[in-house]
Amino acid sequence: MSVKKMMEAYTKTDHTNVVEGNDPVAIVALLFDELIRAMQDFIQHSDPEKGEKDVRSRQFSRSLTIIYALQTSLNFEEGGDIANNLFQLYEYARQQLLQDWKDNTIEGTEKAIISLDEIRDAWHQLSREGAPS
Image 1 (cartoon, rainbow, N blue to C red):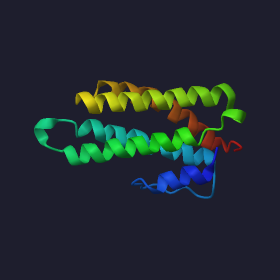
Image 2: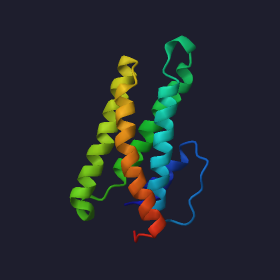
Image 3: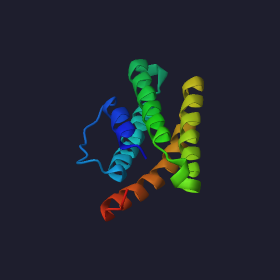
Image 4: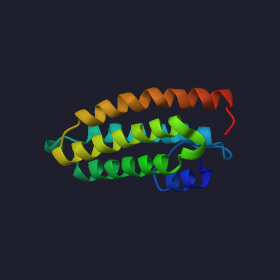
């Protein structure tokens, strides 16, 4: 994984947490937190009656930026099947967001969050255990 790429993409998003050092596992865990938060905000501001298109649009864009950061940080040579599976998960989340954006729905994004949340827990577990990068 390219820590530099992840940090560059992360700095383009709104963030409240700080990652110390260049721990790629902690950075990925943080990106998962931020992605799920952005997707939840996208859902929360999807009611056309409330007229929150700006917020919805910003969270949609933020979610896609984070997904892109996660996808481009994968090392397919060293990561093998795990990298491929993660790429497919990120692509699934991206497709669900795009479809919900197009259809003004939220169901796909809700499903994607459930899948991402399970993997987020694994990244946090690795981060706590101090897994080597």
